[in-house]
Image (cartoon, each protein chain N blue to C red):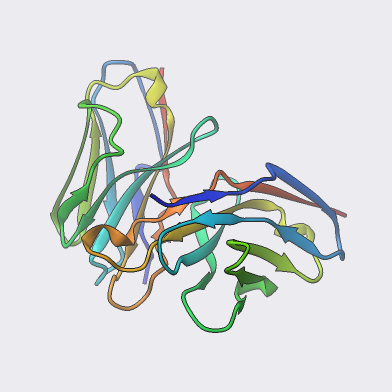
Length: 114
Length: 117
């Protein structure tokens, strides 16, 4: 298996632009998590899905952030409009709830908002 | 709500010496505990977990961790450190199953391990 796939790996954009981050979970996994990592705040859970349904989005910082999971093999995290304080590394992770308990992480997307 | 504390931001150890990275947790019920490692510019990699059973858990790359319920700790250990072990280590906890929201992990802030040649 290729593992969790994220794209792009790096994104540089200007303040006010829309940013879309993409994630493909491991095939067969039924939960997906979006995290944000910064030096100041560490690793924060933004939102997570069970069977493509959002379960907890209390970590989404504000309305500028939105996430979707239209099917079991794809999820997006969108920031519109982006701000410099959104600069961070965004990770996606997936799990098959019924067998393992550990989450498998993607390589991350490093976002820089100028 | 659950929480994890990693009291040391950085741990320095000489190559060949034993290493310990500390973790304490707070959760209702019996915890599910995890250690992850992050190398520079990489995602988190799973090292080991404690769900139930033997308090000493063995994981990848020669790492092990000891679950101590009375001290609510789950310290990561390795008998002999390698320079290649230098990385950022995260402890994480989740509560026992109680519904759809049970699978989310709460992570500590991470401990940077530096193994000195």
